[in-house]
Image 1 (cartoon, rainbow, N blue to C red):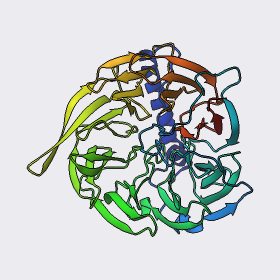
Image 2: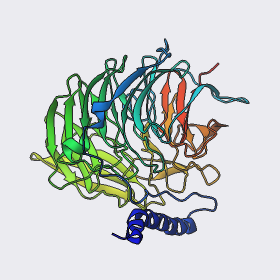
Image 3: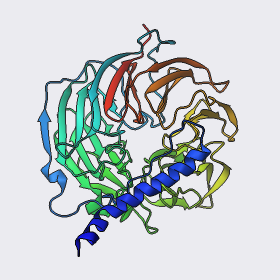
Image 4: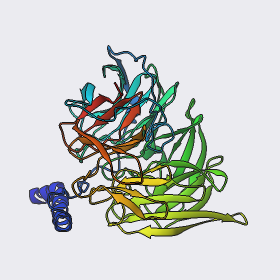
Length: 467
């Protein structure tokens, strides 16, 4: 191969990616309001296939202890979207109704590698996925909830290219174990206190998983004594015994669905415990007891990236939403004569409601989420918009959660708004600039009145308690 061919082979995919992103940015930019930031595309020429040569990176993992210690503080947020995986804090800690100058006050802050990984919190410890570009290692860090000091770090060698951030997932933690899923689909189960390695799974090697564009975004689900994962390779879903790493059941994947950024949602569906997952070609319901495929439908799929997780709204309905003009859909699942059916109850276009990145929250019979134009929206369960925050209050791709009857929502630049979580209208209570960076997209975590937020390179703990 001559020198010209080598250069083309090396740089042409990335160049085409930038051209495509620029064209789409121009198209989107002409449709969105002035000043609105176009969506980002994954860089072409990435390394999504993963590396299966040589030993698994997990076999080269190291554990290092630091000077931090667990805090004697209340509160828990043990995984993606909290205790019940619904984005709502069940705690009764009274939170401030307004913020004076300089508030809410940071309790601590730490630097992090580029990414959007949110925190999990339990027993005074904060668990955070992080990537060290200089050392080329992926890591699970354990920090003190009191001061942010590192307690231990479990890391393994991994080459990851910059692609609008590296780390994106939230660990899942119990009193005994913590489970993480890294950017290239390496699953690690560690002792939650010491960080000692218990077991691991390389989903690319063992299940033929294709690493999604922008790297993995699926957050592990711990349900009882099991970890539920969706490799979407040779198996669509698996259940793994938490204490041993033994695979308890596998769900076949005959239609070759690929992994998305969606996390698995548990729910009671028609009186049966079910795990709902969105693959790249549709949505499926898996029986929690044996992993059997109960139902599937191709009615919901997104062309570029499927990110928000399913939201159960009853024992027969699931709300689905997405970006890239997908809009949203209420899926109704019924069972008759032993046969399951999943059909759309209604659809909403993107202008009415879609959710590009963050999963909507069901609170007191209403859905709250941010639609593609950046407005926070409240919907009733028939899809009618009760209110929108308006173009003067836009939040981009930032996260949100509900606590103490309030909704906390972040914009892209790190300004946080506190509003009443009510269907009666958008009622903001306070605004504050809590992050100095950009791309403040990492899911929030609330524990004992302390809120952990992040932007691309910084993690901050805020004290929101009523004085």
